[in-house]
Amino acid sequence: MITPKQFTFVFLGFMGIILIISMALYLLDIPYTSNDVIRQYQMQKIQASAPVNIIIVGDSSAGLGIDAGEFSKIIGQPTLNLALTGSFGIAGSYNVMRHAVAKHPVKTVIFMHTLTTWKTPFSTQGFLESLDKLPIGDMQNAYKRKNAYADILQAALNPQEILWYIQHLRGSSAPLPVIGDDYFVQHDDQFSNGKKTDPGIFIAPRVERSNRAALTVIGTYCTSHAIQCLIVHGPILSLVYDRSRPAIKRIEERIQQVTGVVFVPFVSSVPIEYMGDTVEHVAPAYKKEMTRRYAETLKPYIKN
Image 1 (spheres, rainbow, N blue to C red):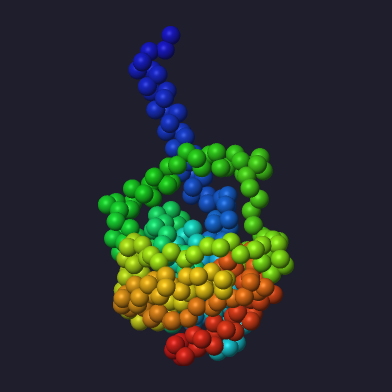
Image 2: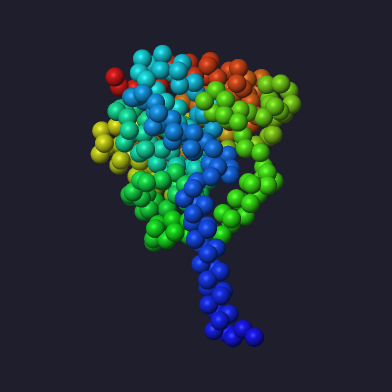
C-alpha cells in the first residue's frame, strides 16, 4: 500500500513532468491557432525581407486593406505590411515594431487598427506571444502588472499546451487559415457578394486607459529612436461610420492627447458593396484601391 509520503512524491513527479512537457511545447512554438500562424509569418518576413524604411503594423484591417507593394510604389520607399490580428492589441503592434527596428533601417511606422480596438482591454497574452526575445521594457507599466516575468512563466507552464498539441496531432482542432496575398484569405461570405448584411452595430466612444498607456509607451519609444510614428484608423463599413461619428470624435480626442505619435485624422468609410467578411475588412478586389487611398492620405505626413 502506498504511503502518503510516496503518494506526494509520485504526484509532485507527475506534475513536474507535465510542466516540463508544457514548457517544451511552448518553446517549440507549434502553430495551433490563427494568431500563431500570422505571428510566425510576419516574424519570418521581418528576417527574410530586404531592408525597408516603412512598416505598417496593426490588425486585420491593415493586413487586408493595404498592399505593401502598391504602397511602396506610391510613397517611393520600401514598405512591409506586418499586421497581426486584433487579439494582439496595441501592445502586439509595439512588439512587432521593435522586432522590425532591430532588423531594418525603419524611418516611419504606421499604426493601423480598427476603431473597435480602443475599447478593448490590454491583451496580456497578445503582448507576451509577440514578445519573443525582446525585453519587456516599459510596457509592463502600461498594463499594470507587478511582475510581467511571472506572466511569462505562467504562459510557458500552461498544461493546456499538451491538450492543444494532442488536438493538433489528431487533426481535431479548428482548421488553420490560409495565407494569401500577404495575409489571411477571407471567408467566402462577404458584404461584397451579398452574403452578409448590415449588422447594425455602433462604435463605442471609449478608449481604455491601458491602451492610452500603451500608446504613451509607443510615443516614448518612437521619440527615443528618432522614428516617425503615425496613427491612422483602419477602414470601416460606411453604415457603421455614419452611426458612430460622435463616438469616433471622442476616440480621436483622446488619441491626440498622447505625445510622440502623430495622429492622422482620416477614416476610410467604405460602401457596403466594397466590404469583405467583416465591417472592418475591405473585399479582396478592393485592396489596391484602398491602398492608394491610404497612400495618398499618408504621403504628406511621411518623411523622406
